[in-house]
Image (cartoon, rainbow over all chains, first blue to last red):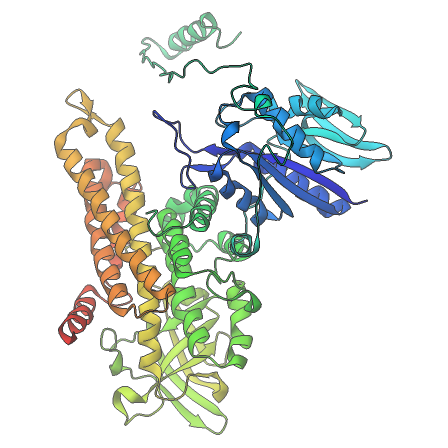
Length: 258
Length: 380
């Protein structure tokens, strides 16, 4: 079976921004939670054959994450980049990704990381599944093709759940599932020498500017305030046993243990 | 450093840095203490192509440019200078001369296994009586039919105890002075090839720097590199390339020292505030950062000149001279900021201080570099 797997990735900021955010190749990286996702797709391609397309929405600086994906072995790489996308919330992002994925038909699987290191909503994968009208399996640990779809193992609180989803389907891949490899130097060199990144805008997706960017986003970011964690040092005195008891009480009173 | 680095170099830097964080930094302190070469890391680096950075793809390498090469060396050295040294020497003074001066047959014979890191290369020039004065080499290769009979005593060979493919600087004509020196490739395992004990060095302790002795070693004449009498030309050309690598190594050590120093200065409190609030500490941190950047600019300039195919001897010599001396100053300041703790093995700056020192000595001492630079300036 020749699988067409689309992996949606994000270029994230390496550090918490101070003031206005300027994204450059130096300040961004491939979202660490997307690395196992890409690895899972490459593993499935290796096992069942097919191709892996990586898809990312974001500013021009997102190309370095896509090149990294090519260096790791992705077959095709697309950046959706349009000034009209600025200010997109997770719903608008899912609308745009959904439209892009539909133009990449036929596809069998669409992979997402469970979250991103710079915004951490976890919305985009599940919302895109809704956009596409296909089943979703989230937090997936391992996968194999079954007779009538994909069999996925999901880790829940103390339980390992095995589910089957018909294809095409959206999968969010758990970060501990497929340990990512490093791109070889030759992969990086070839990606930049021979790899191409297709650039799409709203026009290519036949989307109106109202459906994306700020006009298409019901959510507004009102403010961002850094949280500083106050640490207090308390010295416990008395015998070892007495101090252990005091520590136990403090931890229980604070809800740290029960 | 965006002036010199393209998107490719940023991606490369990030991926090498991630590798080093995961695989090298956690063991760097221990392999220094134990003076152990980490084969388990070497194998991983080999699979990723770190041993054939600039070798063309058709010979098993990654086919990258010199800016990429120094990016890799700087990052590895930032984690562990001894491993950075292994990779730098292998790529620049072992692989490069074979690529530049070897015949097609020689390249096919040696390069693929070196580029894949299945074999490790070494550059065997220094002898008990020949170092800065390379023309004083006493080792000999006497022609006997289709073979050379080599007798050599090489000391301070970087990668010595782990090297498979050794570029041996020997005298093929005892009466021809500087023009009597040649390079013959000798493989480990050849009868008469013995490796001495690893040196108990002050720094770079993860690299098994050793002596290599050849006693009546018979090597086919086709192992001669670039023709008889070309030894010093090959050596100097290799060292031009090597110097850029050593400079990048020195800047990697300094970057690590600055990183540790900034971390420490923000956390260590004296007189009621983190010491980073004290001007005396800020002055040192400013000097460290500025000098590191100055060195890196020189290094990138040399690398870019090489990539453009321009002459880079002078630029490489300046980069190596300045970066190695900078690295000694910066690691010294790092120890100073750390105070007593900096002089203890509990903090990595103590290792950086030891590692930095030798960059002023090997692949040409600072003094030899000043000689080379002055010669260039005065000839203009």
